[in-house]
Length: 505
Image (cartoon, rainbow, N blue to C red; front, side, top):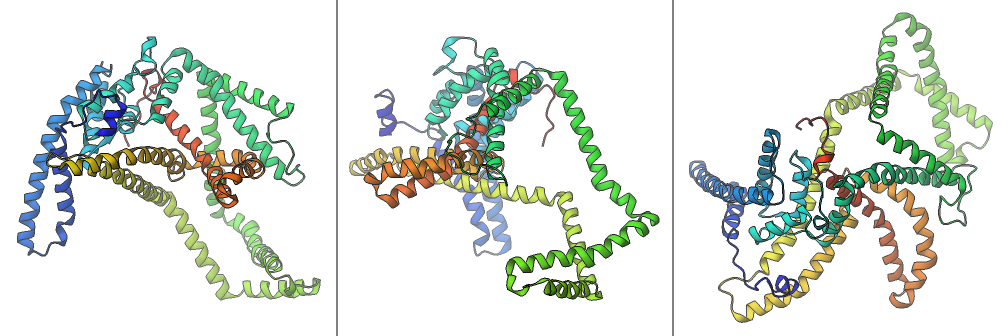
């Protein structure tokens, strides 16, 4: 591994033994064989025997890996202070170790972000930072990263520079008492207030009667905007600091939501069953719906799409009479009732879990895309690893290709994770939308008036325009990435553990 030898200034040897690689690759290849086994042209008895044979070998191989990796992972967690202090944390540590081993068995590797997310999701947490040396390279999570890099050589992917820099930043914010106070009393409330006021000002400029496009680049350049930012931020800071007020506000919001649910969903069903209400309200509403509202909507649609069909008021009356006549005929009423039943069934299906299944399907597609991209990079790294029987020429070729491939891989991975992956993630995408609403009105004029003219002499107009447009389009995704990283890093520390245990999914 010439690249690691160069980056470690000769500390790590060029040729290193990968003690776990053989067993991990055997398990991965057995899984591949089982996946393609149904396509083998064998009789059912012989195919069943072959399937049971490979399943037995795979089970044995996986158990060997679990028995081998579990002590290594537990020792590494103990070395950085992740030692269980009560039964709940003991169960959490077993779950963390099991999740990481499952990732190795499924994909053949695991990474820094897998370790970070497993700790953040479970009840085994890091202690607060108490010494100066624990900030920086001696951070507990970064020490764990180095330990796993040496203990799981070849199957552990160390953290990249952007992940380590964010960990150093967030460890101060979430791993110290004064950092948590600064986050909850200043950074988070006033940052949220800045975003809310900025979105309100940008939307107000484009509403009827708004100022439209202004010469001012910043949407919060007025004293009134800063007054609202300070007022809203101060109110949220007080809310974050007052647990009783926050619980009381949450109770009020739940009561309001329950009342709205009764008003919107339960009350119409109760009234619809009452005969007096049906006679006094439902029948007149049906007449107005089919004879007034629907014809007027159809006339407006025709006028917007083909205004030459409605040249004067007489044609409006003719159209209204024809539509009212058609919409009160029996075939149209039957069709309209059928469409209403379909919409009602769709709403019931969504309430019964259809929406959740759709979101779960999108989540699986997202995970498959991310896993495919990451696996392709890992397989490329494995292809460039030196083998024991390589000739001198082949070793030189692998070294030369590695010197070019590794920097390209690192830059591509950072750009994909920071600028592309958030807009594919169903939970990060709303944050990207909010950031786009704030950034596009500000960065759009800057790109067309400043960046493109500055880059055109060097790249040419079309290449400069493509580069700047792509950068501006993808820039909001970086905020989705930062939001998720801050969220996961906050869950690493024991002081941020929820006061109530979370229900198991």
